[in-house]
Amino acid sequence: MTERSSANPALAVAFGLALLAGLLVDWSPHYWRVVVAIAGISLVGAVWALTTGKVDLPGQTILILAIALWAPMQLALHITRLPWPTTQRAIELAACAVCFILGSQILRARRNRDAFLNLILGATTFLAVAAMLQMYLTPGRVFGVIPVGDSIVGTIYYKNWFAAMMELAAPIALWQVYNGNIVVGGLCFASMFAATVTSASRMGVILLLAEFLVALMLLVVGRRMRMKSAVSLVAILGLLTAAATAVAGTDVIWKRLEESNPYALRGNLLASTQKMIPIHPWVGSGIGTWPSEYPGFATYDWGLYVNAAHNDWAQWASEGGIPFFLLMLALIVWLAKPCVQSVWGLGVLSVMIHSYMDYPLQDPALALFWFSLAGATTQIGTMTRSRPRASEPESN
Image (tube, rainbow, N blue to C red; front, top):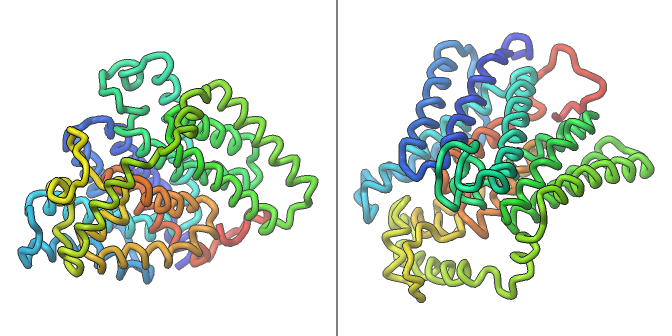
């Protein structure tokens, strides 16, 4: 299959818009926000199925299908402790599998992928700036109009979920730098980093800095850049990021970084979750059942409803059993190489690291976004381009 025969940038843009629709309404605590995202993806999937020619699924699809079928298997075998939350999560995981397949097929062509990534970059940069303006000018109101709860950052329900969105998008900005668009990419990355600082997500700030360093290393090694040029590039990006961060303010994030035991709560939750895993080690208690199972294993009562383990990996092992945990682990190991090769896919790895300290993939809108980018990375280097551009590395 050639680039020319499979290119359909309009469908790639529609795919991006469907994902963004879910992110734009992610501030709502109600389930309709999930329906918006799934409905948009379903429509794009139907159009793709009716218009596509040859389908060339990547090998990782085997793992994706196993992950998507795990919750239905629990329901069919009456394994789950609570059928309704498992049913909800089964629908969401099925949509994630669809996003992975659409990402691997629609974004296979270079023109499609460029259109998709440019749309996502522009939109998430806008959301980053809007989040900063909201925090300082109209706190408690999305876009200065819609009243929301105190936990909302931009259009995202929770600060660490917002940081995860930035982690997924920031490498796209660094990819622009990698391809020579230093000003555009630098400004977008600086905006995202400043917004993450404003959100006060410690792990988000650390991971964005890690993405910056890895992308710089890939730039120096992959492009064999001279040291003088590399230093100049770092200086430019550093100045842009420092300036944006100074404008956003660093007082809150510094206070959080200086906390003596910042992960005490997460440590207690992890200890409780580890006690839950041996009860159903091979099949789990049911995807989506952790909140209802947790009170029976809690070691401390905060007097609050605890909605997640704040550790996706531990929660997967508890709800889906050790095999489900291993499926997720095998998937990320299989994706690691193409994620690094692409540069723009580094966020797929970052979010999985963040998932050890929080629960970003429990948010359906972010999960759909993550699986879409994960699917797209599987096609790096597989498409024959009609007119390769000398300024771009073949692997991107």
